[in-house]
Image (tube, rainbow, N blue to C red; front, side, top):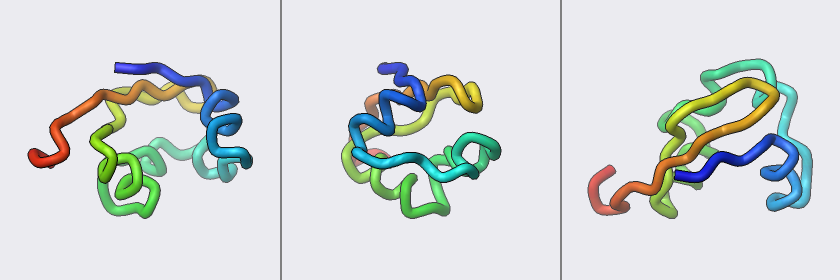
Length: 65
C-alpha cells in the first residue's frame, strides 16, 4: 500500500486534479471512470480516501481485477 497526498498526486501528474476529486468520494471509485481504469490497468486500487487530504492505493494482481 501507498498513501499519497493530493498535492503529491498532482506533482506526479504534472497538473491539478479536478475539483470533483477533492469534493466527491465517488470520483475515487475503482470502476466506472477513466481514472479508475488507468490505476486499475497498472495494478492498483483505491483502498481509502480522505477527501482533500490523501488517498491510499493498494497493489493488486492485474490479472485478478
